Length: 217
Image (cartoon, rainbow, N blue to C red; front, top):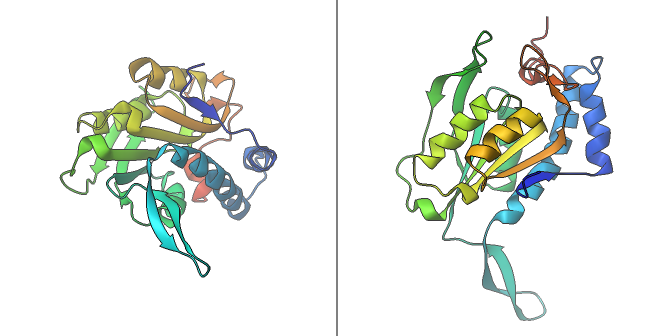
């Protein structure tokens, strides 16, 4: 496996992932379990952010603390619609980040992504000092993931500054991204067995967006 692929192995993550997989889990419980896992994934992803030293005065004395480098820009980019639930947590933990929504849906015949929205904050101050978190619950074929990563590569953001956070990944999706962009980081809670003939992850958890927003019929 590529050294930049990180699987978060933790009992709480595994416990909540089992809740998500269960077809009988209702939307409310599904969303709570999803958020608990994402906190762990996002903490893992943010460890790659550069830091700086800052003087701070405690009630006892002056000392030196560590902060996220104020010279960098951080973009949090959820892939709509399922990535939205992740962006709330990311914004809570990084309130100074910029939110860049990417809207894509999958053509069920070709499994290729179709774009419908791409909202950028404006011109980047310095692409070399910009870090991007792409949020998508499922890294399946890797087609939408590739398009999302490429969207930022075109803006001259270094691949090593891009962190792709996915709840569950398939080997095909991981291979697609790491073959083209071996320097990006992929953070996930599980790499599942395979894709089925419809491009869904097996064993997976079904359609993440439908289960998040309770649109399963």
